[in-house]
Amino acid sequence: MATDDSAVPSTVTRPELLTDGSDGTFRELVHDLLALGARHEAVRNGHASYVGLAGAQYTTLVTIRHLQDHPATVRVVAEHLRVSPAFITMETKKLQAAGLITKTRSASDSRAVELAVTEAGHRLLADLSVVQRRVNDEQFAELTAAEFRDLHRLVKRLIRTSDNALALQRLIATHRTESAG
Image (cartoon, rainbow, N blue to C red; front, side, top):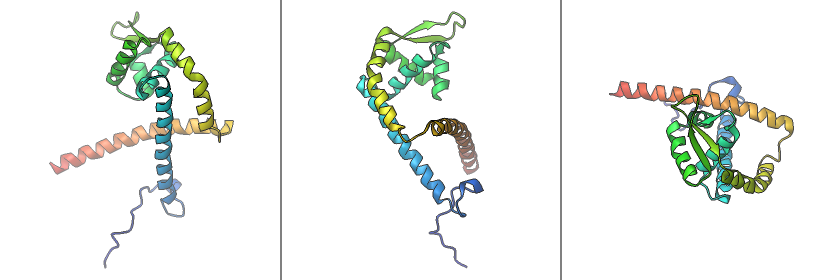
């Protein structure tokens, strides 16, 4: 008996992710998330451009500002943004050269570097805040307060399970490479 090779195989098996046995809604959600991610990154890059920074520099600067009371070290900022410490080191060098942050050796851990936003950095972010508020308010205008809280909670959970999925994907790739070699 011949099989229909043109049939699209399902991309999920969990019943919670299927609608009437189909993964069509799941695939639509994935595509919508990709579209949202691209638009959100464009908004972030627009904020950055408004103050003369690249997107990654802007995100790093804002994160340092929000975390500097903890204190904000390279490792803490990297963990918060879920990127490598080497990436944060590279971005903070640019921010320091622009006079937007300072770096000082940690008093409690000589291996750590504490990061702080300078007055110039605070002024830059304050100049952006008027535009930023308008754009952010518009981007999330459709959400009620309860939906906003739910979205926040769901996104945090999806980040965690996405990290798990990436680890699984790497493991499968490693096993595939090992068995092919």
